[in-house]
Length: 59
Image 1 (spheres, rainbow, N blue to C red):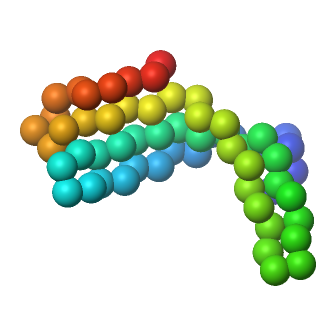
Image 2 (tube, rainbow, N blue to C red; image 1 turned 30 degrees about the vertical axis):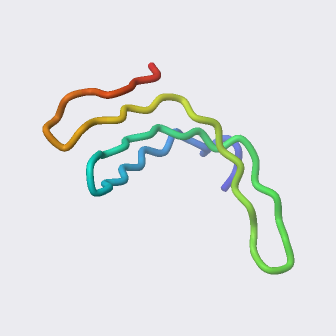
């Protein structure tokens, strides 16, 4: 992906007792013989209990 097209990516993971939503920004891609590695930075995240209450947040 060209740097001009790099955008923030939102990802949500749900565990047994929580959900985590993170916004990641792609900062680098390192090619490799077995596949590439994508390096990201965390722009923000929200950790919630399954009842919807916020446990932690990074704006």
